[in-house]
Length: 590
Image (cartoon, rainbow, N blue to C red; front, side, top):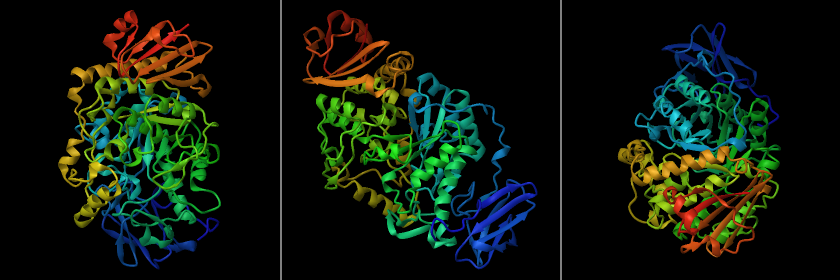
């Protein structure tokens, strides 16, 4: 079916004045019934494959559809309290009483992201227990909470990237109204909330779209689990655009992070990413769309009108700088002060050069993009969890606590949009491993597939923690009690101070890219920010101890010391002019 073909109105269970309207679309079923709380009722067949019936039942009723005699879950279900294969629950999102209805979101240049996984962020692993930590996030100074995927996925624990019923929040995390309460509380504290969504594939278990119509998918494209999504099919497009609108309207989320957009394949006249951007921005307010996309394509912003792009290149250059790793996709990166200065000047590394892992050009120049369009990070769920042991950057034997703090100060001093991953701000001791909860043979297949996908990393050559083992999940849960001890406390203090300075300092608040210039002097990275309010100069010493007075920089050293990555050395460094190895300072003038 082409994109121009007739398209159904909203599908699923829709609260109406007289009860609930149940509507389904199918190209294969000749008869569809709905079974509500054990009672089956025929649905009226309408043109274009639509079946519907209105019944005098309220929110809370349980139901499933019956296709030609076969009980079948609703892929448009708004809640699946018993899991992907169970009955759906009728949900009326308008019942929730919002306390902060006047919230209108924030602009991208004001976002400082904190990525978290509901299941491991707290001991409770629910929206309600995460809500209790929101005041901490406000105190930390972040402004945007980004949730890893919460669309219903198999089992109890998982990363969420194998979601199969995209309209249903994952039941083990809590009920839909618990998610609404989380968002409402965040808004009340001045925090914007983003959600990671997966529109490039469905998980291998629990997706029932093909039972209603095989035309949702196509053999023209492939996903990790078979046929790809057919965005030339109007109902597939509507499934995705309606899903985005649901999260932003019914749950009042402020934006979406689109997972792996390079894997969203669309050969229709208008790319689904462009249509998504149009639909989302049409909602009003400050709804934002961010792409995770390693291709380094500025047209995602300039042509498709997404708002920003996650930049893997920055993470990779920082990691190679600190660890000298050349394993897997780190191989093409140089690391060091010169390489860091280059990416800060250019936005990302690959601008059309050959990408050795695919033997083809990667990227285009990003001169047209302003700084906030680049989302920078030194950790995220992928870059930790894709390692065999789920080890964080600061767990590496070559990365000292002071080196990690210096890298953190760099991240938080740039005009690019920074993103932190849960626990990063106190250099958490806990890993973030890959964990799943699939049944039987599928669980074994996922474990083996994971090892094959990252087989080019040496860490995957031996034994790795079993994703299916509950202990793997439990090991990834944050330990909040360690925050106040030793290096953890020192790192947390730096993050709080650097974030506060980022938000209060007139020069650092200026997010224009033309206020930034970067360079290096041997193993010293310098990053200068300047505008009408003055100048700020970050120096990160990647080599041996040096004296600031010996530096021959293109600009005079500003006279005031704003921040030292080792806070207790602030006065000593200012008095002696010495900058130790793997230390960073932020200077101010005039």
